[in-house]
Figure (cartoon, rainbow, N blue to C red):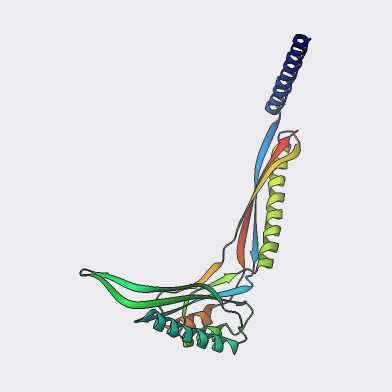
Length: 241
């Protein structure tokens, strides 16, 4: 009885394996016989940055870390007060570092004292007419301009990204349809799709050792957020019927 059961199990397993092999072979054959086409779509959209971002540094040097930190705090407080007069309430800290300023000479290590570097970020609407005054008040307080960017707010970035990807996707399909139509074929189902969206803030100004007066004059004379271009690419793979 046990022997017959074992034989039945062996036969059942053998049948299952054979069926599996046949199904696998059929799928492989079908895959080889089906053809696909790959197409890359592109789109470019013009958008006006709605944010001006100022990146400031407050650097102070003193004989002790406590003294350097106190000097730094005084400049920050002065900066905050100056900007509040211009309705700028939010100043974001990007980084804050206290370290000994070491200089290496031919005679060995030399300490110049303790340095505090407070990196700050201020973002305002690009339509704000007080940008010149904001820069003047920042420099007057003792802060340095690290760089200034034109940027997109998260909402504008998301909306622009969706629009660019949609246009690039349509472009990819249009190209694929034209290619297969020229061969007397039709476009089948979408197999896979990949997208890439290129956006990074646009640098308007970067510190290069200019005096405070030169920085202020340059920014006031040139800062005007004009339209910028953002691109998207979509790679799609379709079946060909």
